[in-house]
Length: 466
Length: 149
Image (cartoon, rainbow over the protein chains, first blue to last red):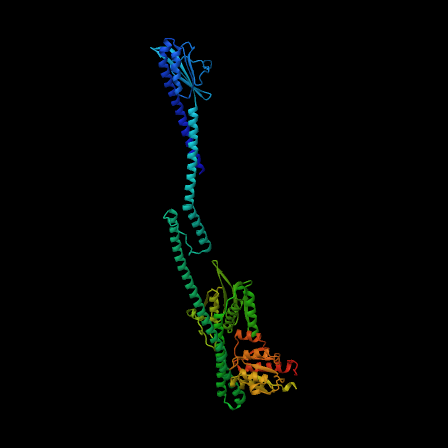
């Protein structure tokens, strides 16, 4: 607005300046023609020294209202005839001295135009015409121009204002509204919002259309994404519910096993013992032996059930990891073993300051089983030795429990960890074959690995990571 | 006389009943044993209703041996009602059961069981458990003062 106004103003000024310059020139030119006419008509008057005739000629200048005064000089510079717009006024004394030149000369002086025109007859200078003109015409013209320029400027500014306001309404406002819509969409993630079309089929309308189309696509994709997410969530819910239901069933099953499967065993064992106590004297040694076998089998069955329940419990138990001092834990397990069989001669070497992040309850079961096994399978050694430590190799490390006991055939190393898998008979070494399966399950649930190395009668080493 | 107070055995399995009685007997526990074969019967005995209507409920058992898996009313529910009643809330209750599930023990103690004993498969062990139970609850333990209404 300001720029266009300034440009317009400069253009007007330049135009007016140019016009004034050319107008001045044309004024001087007109004045020169008038002077020439006056000069030509005054030749004879000058030649015949007839000032009256010359004055007559000069008075014709009345037709030009801008001419203030005029005069004819003789070649020696004396005033020959004079004219003044205000009749009667003496002009002669106001006349300047005219430079004796052969061509027209004009100059502007204090708001007036003065012109001197030499009168030449047959190549001889016979006098000079002098005309003094005011610049009224030019002033008027200037005023007119100023007026026109002002009107043009005002009109242009008004037009510019109008155009700007139309532009504002047609372009700027829709774009501002669109920007606001975009801001709300991005803030509220509400892709159902749309820009309002201007309905003018103009650029903003096209822009809004494109924006809405983009929103439409985003909304579609957002919807699809949300649907996929919801479906996934739903599926996770279903799976979780299924898992929870399965877990609950498993728990109910375990509970039932725990209660109901052991009851008959108690009866078998209880009444077998009652039979032995009450009627033992009437039974032959073989009969008593049978009853003892029944009782042993029953108790073994009880142990199996307990171990199976334990295994199942380890599978279900929630893991709560914390920093566990494995060395201290191993020491307490060893103390328990020694207490159970105080007569065993056995050496335990437990590495100090072994720490792990694990569930303390579960990792205790691991150590109880591994150290218990080592304790058990060294029972026939003359100098039994069990070691618990940490093996460090190339940045990775594993805990190990090593013994110098019965060992095992390395061909069966992987079978060791299956439930009910035993490499020894119960009479050699008692056990249910569930301990290592339980240990493996706990290690796996901690995200660790377990493996074993050994040879028959050369001891066994169990490695595990947590 | 304290010795004349009964033991209430809540047990649905007749084998377990016979074995428990035998274990008590083997350990020279001479108290009369009242057997309730389900939870409802146990509550009837304690509150003098139903089959035991008119029984003097002020005569509380020395101890209740309570199985958990019971017909009609479950053992834990029996315990809850016993503890909720002013007359029996201090009654010594020993849970005697097959299960050693954590949830049973937690709930049992939570409801105010005085003791939780698991019935072992090995009857010799059960005999020892019964001996200790008898010693503790029938000889060593001083019961709550008898309420007279």
